[in-house]
Length: 321
Length: 213
Image (cartoon, rainbow over all chains, first blue to last red; front, top):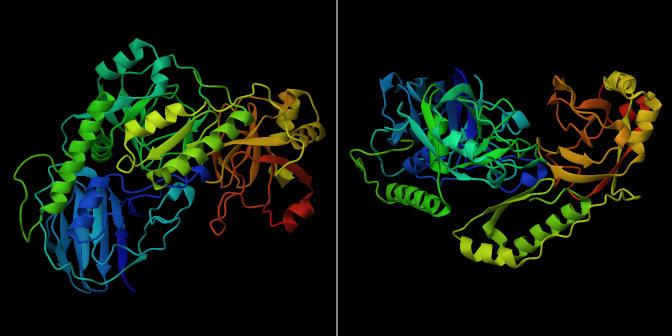
């Protein structure tokens, strides 16, 4: 099989797909793309199912050489990208030839950039039905210079283009969340504080969790028996600094949980840079249903619409808006 | 309010999960069990939420016995080398508790433990309850790195660290067997609901079984 040879990784790059569901009982976390929308968009642009594997590059900074022709797409965080020194755009299907070198700069906006490839994605060995790497748990390895990542050489018949990714904006983000069942033990004050206080994305963040700086959140919830966690869980450790659990979350946790952030907002959070203002807003079940329904519809619209070279929409929220 | 954890509750939760799996099949994408909670990940495009919730409400609450009864016969026996070279907390713990190393080892290996929950890391299983005389809070400062296989205690719990990782529990020994093996199905050695006992072994046996010092 042909492969992509990694020349340089500035920070961290891993192979990710839709995640490893079904093994929480063995303590195996899901993993999967942090900005799963950007990941799916990339797979769409190269004609793959969304369960295919891409390379997730944290903070940009990645150089690699293709050994066989393919089509690729870059989605997610904004970076300057060149193919054999010629600049190439985000959110386009790009044809690459054997021997071509891709050079991705550091991210200028956003956190995670995704490299997708035609022919069904990167073909690393799946573990429990997924290629997602969870470094902490020894499920796969992070990419390093010299690594070879196999792929099937294939050319996508249609060339797609989607509008420039306005996502990953520096503007404030609202984390809409469903209150969890611990909330019944929390004081009114606690929820009010969470919804009215000013917060910002901390620089303490990784694929496991993102810390939120700002006013301390004091809960009156007593110590918990360890219980299963969800992606988006708003954990309140004793220091009162909320943690939002992300793709590589630990499968059980003992901290009080005030609620769970809806998936579209988790994606925005995953792309937000440290210092981005954050506020929390609780939503009802029916509001959450509507938000998620609109989100799915928006994505289906994207999936149905692409035409060769077409631009789908001039403005609006894209990818991680 | 949540029911307090007990082996009866855990067995009830396991049975509940099986019932749900029978009912909704592939709509159940993932399941996790905590000490007294269950997480169900459900594809609501397969079964509507209102329908599922209505059905869940018809199920009886899992039985729960408040009293903890230890089982006499373990489902799984795991060898543990309780040597000082792999047990940095054996001596300090003895000093704090006012008992000898030998007594700690006896107390720890005599009890048959129940596997309440998995998580934290692949193959990590929360076992309990340890003898009251051994119960201590977690270390004030967690160790940055604990060797794979380390057998440790904290509060009413005991567990084995499947991989080397940071940890705040008190280390009493080391198990030479892999607790999480990707080549096995399932990969985790201990399953929720099992009864587990530790069997003291000496240094030679530890090495013979593949243990690393």
